[in-house]
Image (cartoon, rainbow, N blue to C red; front, side):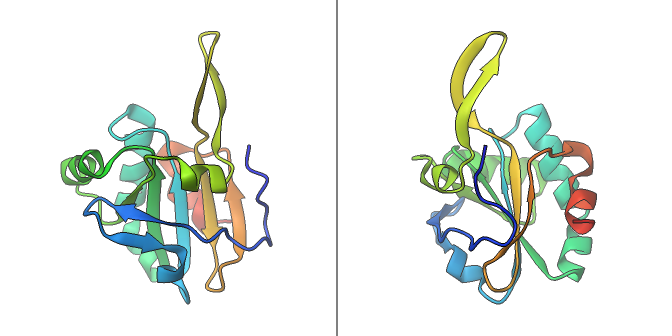
Length: 151
C-alpha cells in the first residue's frame, strides 16, 4: 500500500513509453496528471480501466488532465495494447518496477492462497505543481473516470 498521500510532492520519475521515448514527471509540469498504475496489459480489469479512461478521455482533456498509465510490461506489449484498444494516452514501461516502487504500489499480493509481488492498482492525481491531489486505491475499473473527476 502506498504511503504517498494527498498533499505530498509527487516522486519525480523517469522511464520510457511504448515508443521507447523518455517520459518524466517534469514533462507534465504545469499540467494536471492522472498517473495510473495497473498490473498487466490486456487482462480483463486492466483493459476495462484503460477503456474507461479512453472512452472518457475528452472529459479528462476538457478538465486539463493528461493521462499516463504505468505497468511492468515492456514497450512492445504496451504498443500492442494501445493498438488493440485504440488508447489515446501513453503507457510507461516500468520493467524494472522502479516507478512502481517509488510510488509504493509494488506490493505483496495474494491470490488463491499464493503470495506474490505485483502492482496494487492505484491512481495518483497530480496537480500542475507536482503535488498529489488525490490517491485512489479502490479503483472501479469500469467507472474510473468518474472517480477521478469527482475527487
